[in-house]
Image (cartoon, rainbow, N blue to C red; front, top):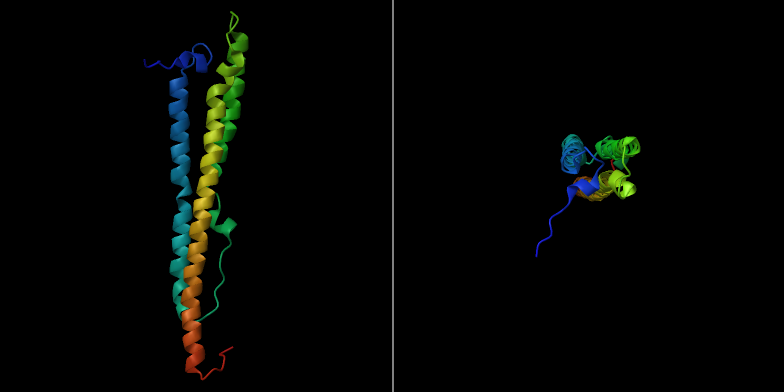
Length: 161
């Protein structure tokens, strides 16, 4: 027998937990889309530095924090918004005329879920972006080593430096 979810128990009276979860999902989706700028910065760096590396020139690489930049701020702002949502829930429960059953569950269910999802997604994306960052570095290093090794051999083992 399938049990139906009682959404009313997850938010204060007069508040729709379903709508709050939908808005939280929209905020997390927008944060994920915003974070895709990291891929653009990685691509731009590769496109700018690959020709120089192919000539055997030393290149200045941007660090991971510079590439990541503000990519995860949307997740952090969503987590902060969940704290304010929890405070608003507690204010609604306190103003209620009747005693509310399980007030902490009603006040914290959606905000805690939002914070956990925001932090988990930001951690997962950080790991993915760091892996792509390392792969990008490896590709640039390989291009540089190939060009530098060819130039070194063409000069009869004498460095251009």
